[in-house]
Image 1 (tube, rainbow, N blue to C red):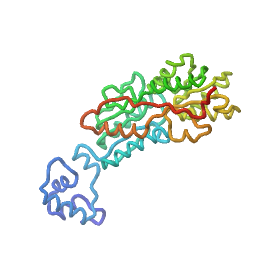
Image 2: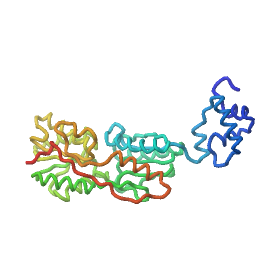
Image 3: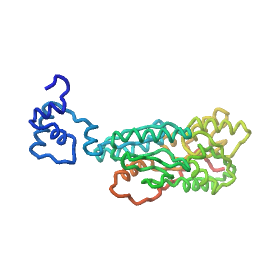
Image 4: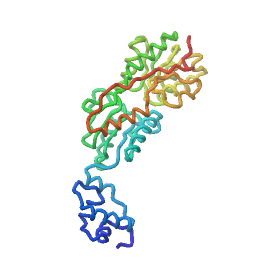
Amino acid sequence: MSENAPTLSDVAAHAGVSLATASRALNGSARKVNPELQERVLASARHLGYSANVQAQAVARGTSNLVALVVGDIADPYFASISSGVVRVADERGLVVTITATGPYAGPDSTAREEAALDALRGQRPRAVVLAGSRVAGAETRVGDPGRVAVIGSGAPGLRTVDVDNRGGAAALATSLRGLGYADVAILAGPGELITVRDRVEGFRSVLPAASVVHTTFTREGGHRAMTELLASGARPECVFAVSDVMAIGAMAALRAAGITPGADIGVAGFDDIPLVADVTPALTSVSLPLADLGARALELALADAPLPAAPVPAEVRLRASTPRR
């Protein structure tokens, strides 16, 4: 036996079998090994302290015990919450999650980064892939064949999809704000080519069509910058609707920097209902999505032998102190 870490050849020699038999016994090949030989090889591996090569197992099986999650920005609480649901289901199935972050949306480069990530995943032969980033209107989602794929959100025809009712949730929020007495509302939107942004803006304006729209990046900094620009233009809307909570939090910071009290002077609302929005001051009105459940359902969908029934995930308005009655 070698003086360093034991190899597959060491295990085969110790068990008195061929290298091919040892490989099939340890790497889970579809070609079955005699149970007696299988146990002999496993006993030798334990005795020698041999660890199986995960890549070799993946090649032998045609897949692996890995599931891949591709997100925009793991630091974003939206993606972190989705990730927790994916990890929960993976743990229940005895699978391991690898997470790839493509970074905040930055136009065509973001699509290219996502495709590069999927290309890299093919070598790992993941059991399933979950795509959690927003789709781009008019752009085809090219996934090649890295494993079974499920997408969270609209805009991925031909792929298993967990469809979120972004349009209906935004319309319900606009209806609630109108009921509280808000008529003059500005929308702080992310890039217009993102389907999530488009659906949330269009849903909101289906109820309040006069709402103005300012496009910015889909980040906290984008929300801060858009709110600052809006105030600099002289606009003083009764309320601002940011199409994501992190953008809304950035907008609230910009209001305070301008000496304006969020909620008391200008109402603020977001979307997603990430965990921390109930703890900011004032607590943020938002449209609640079951983010962890979205991640869990997406992985279950990707792993299923047959497509599961499709049903849009409902969104529910959560009114809080940031939008008091006028």
